[in-house]
Length: 450
Ligand SMILES: Cc1cc2nc3c(=O)[nH]c(=O)nc-3n(C[C@H](O)[C@H](O)[C@H](O)COP(=O)(O)OP(=O)(O)OC[C@H]3O[C@@H](n4cnc5c(N)ncnc54)[C@H](O)[C@@H]3O)c2cc1C
Image (cartoon, rainbow, N blue to C red; front, side, top):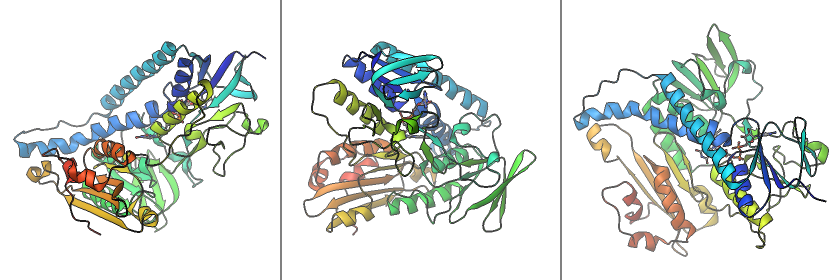
């Protein structure tokens, strides 16, 4: 049987584009279908525009801090449409870059919604394409719980395109997207409330980091309400009233829910083909991204393992090489994935939390440092930086590093390499610091704190 393609990818996001391009570079005949935006969530409504907004929101502090350094800056105000539209322009440029990447690799781009007809056939409007292998890389979509008045709320998808900029916002959720957007709104001058049902946000991150960040965010003016739930939301003219379980009612211009994302599989036709799902609704795959239907693969957010762009990319690279080279099929190594949260100050982290590391390594040593960043010795800003290094005393290996502070993601990326390479605390101690930086603290911590 001859097929139109060796690989048909549904979804031109982080994982799908990478899998498609790399497969084509190995000589495979590849098509990629996309129905909304080239580059997927990350480029259009995720990492990239989010980081641009974080940059934009930090000027607020920078203008204030400039005075101590001799600069008299009188900001004339913040103009939301300019930030939003300049961001849109940059994203359009990136959409073009993605198109060029696919064209350059010889991948056929098909614009429109794709669904599966059978194990080797994809349908798009009136067209049908056959493929030996089909990759579902359709990503994920924000979910809002069934709270009365949910029609009055937005998600991160809409936050990137607001017509009217709010004066007051209520962000609901405790994951990294909620925390980052609270920082963005707050930095852009919006009165910001964050409502989270649990005792402390950023579940899954190091406990000390979570507590430290909560204190820092409170100092920047965000009102954090933990152990609080929303009972209902009502419209009051253009404003919204958020009724909380403690009887309080918050009136805001905007209510943003960032309470989770679910695999985007609606209308794909997976059920009819018997493609199995995980308990959370993701597509169930084995270590090689193969679903219960052997010709159908899935990776990235739709398999609901780690919803991160570099993970989707690594999975795409791995699958392409497994399918179209004659190497022994390999697996992605999910250990020690470094990650950042772009709250202000940032979090950077690699390896287990202190709590998890204690379970893994009974003789754990924790090196910790907290200090005022050099820049703020002059500005008087109360912001502090925190760093933590986790060392397994049995073999001296550094097993984790956590940081809260400016550019934490940039710093932790390098430490991720060291930890992946198996660096010991002795290696850290032998490394000469770069002075004066915050990062040098990671190679000068001498005495364990516990
Ligand atoms: C607000 C926000 C901030 C984030 N920040 C970060 C960050 O800082 N760092 C990080 O690593 N990750 C971040 N992420 C996560 C990251 O964006 C995702 O993990 C990543 O995009 C997943 O890639 P993917 O290829 O699995 O899916 P996606 O990038 O979502 O791509 C899926 C594509 O499939 C298309 N599609 C879906 N169904 C069909 C269909 N039937 N037919 C045709 N096309 C279809 C979609 O339109 C989409 O373009 C963020 C996410 C959000 C929402």
